[in-house]
Length: 128
Image 1 (spheres, rainbow, N blue to C red):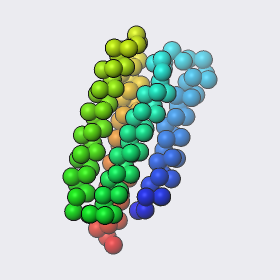
Image 2: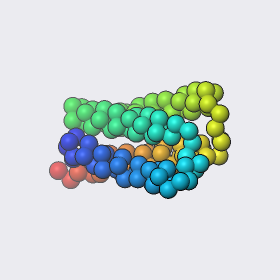
Image 3: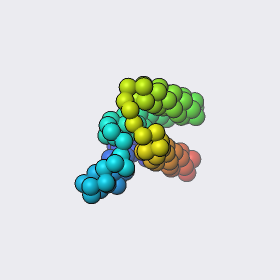
């Protein structure tokens, strides 16, 4: 799978992931969203995008380092997310249950999508 195809799929995914929070926000039940929800959304989605691009570039240049690139990207993403959570919770007063639900909604769906695209890409490399 080429990088451009992966970027297109990622854009479609990000739009689909943003639809439920937008619906909640415009439906009048915005108390289900933590304040600055979109900051969290764009931070984690940006990390996922950067990680995917780096892994796909590593795979194109040196396929032997694909697994190491994937593991490094995943480690950096989870560490950056944990630092973000600590700083975010120290700076703003939020309902921790709502924050936890919102954070894991974004983080887990991004992680599942990233693994799906990268595994699909790896499968195509093995067939070809």
